[in-house]
Image 1 (spheres, helix red, strand yellow):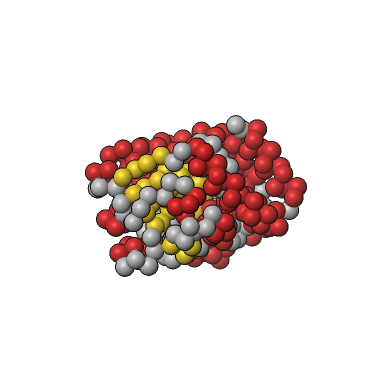
Image 2 (image 1 turned 60 degrees about the horizontal axis):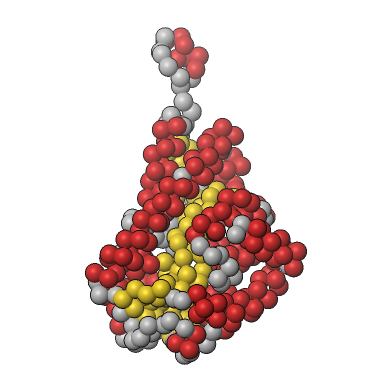
Amino acid sequence: MAAVACALGLAGPVWAAKHVIKVSHAVTVNHPGHKAMLKFKEKVEADSKGQIEVRIFHSSQLAGQREGVEGLQAGSIEITLTPNGIAAAFDPTFALLDIPFQFDSAAHARKFLDNGGEKMLFANLGKVGLVGLAAWEQGFRNLATVKAPAMKAADMQGLKLRTMEAPLHITAWKAVGANPTPIGWAQVYTSLQQGIIDGVENPSYIFSQTPVHEQLKFLTLTKHIYDPILVLGSKAFFDKLPADLRTLVFHSLSSLTPQERQYVDEDVTKAETKDLPGFGVKVMDMPAANMAELAKASQPPVIKDVERRVGAPALQAWQSAVNAAR
């Protein structure tokens, strides 16, 4: 091709065939992760000068959360955005992030991830056919309820609460006396409406950006779990991608982490100070003493389970790094 181009006197470089990157995720077009992924598409297509084409499939158009990761392993999907609870089903290292109340603030969690935490998370992914590309975030998970506010441990007793299908989340809520029920997000609205569940936990803007807020009365800012959304890739695909393009993709995604976090901060602030109050949802801070009470009850069984999954040395190294980032 190049020789023919030279013979014909054509100006400019001749690019190789496109590499198509299919990005699958389950979140909506309003989610910070999707907005950041649109920036990734724009950036990597321009910087690769046409060698890479990015196709984004949002809202589970291509695959659900678990199916998206399975697609990476099978080589049918190149990149997915997935919550930590799903990733932990493929690599137990991610269970370390499910320890409740381990981060004091978003700044603490971000400092930890940026100073070795992300590397620790991604260390074993190659063993399961995956590649860690970036640790983006969804913000802290908070507790929304229908009948009464949940402000202290006593309010959690018997609370029928929707959780993700994340075993350690279930362990934590059981430890504080709640009755956690893992159901799909699509069933949350009707489950609240019919009284099947009393509450649901998620980052605040998830409630304001979906119709679920119509069934809610209270939001307590429990901040019980720092909730990343992980950018994972197919090892089979990235092993075959030319080194320069592979570096370009990795750098493009990691360089967008601050932008994605800014989207999260903007959405959280808007949800908690404007949108949810405007919808009639009362937003309340949980007192630090009450958080400490919940942490005291929920952490020991989760930490015990995490140690069983990852081993004592990995757990100790993780906790030391978390403490060092304070």
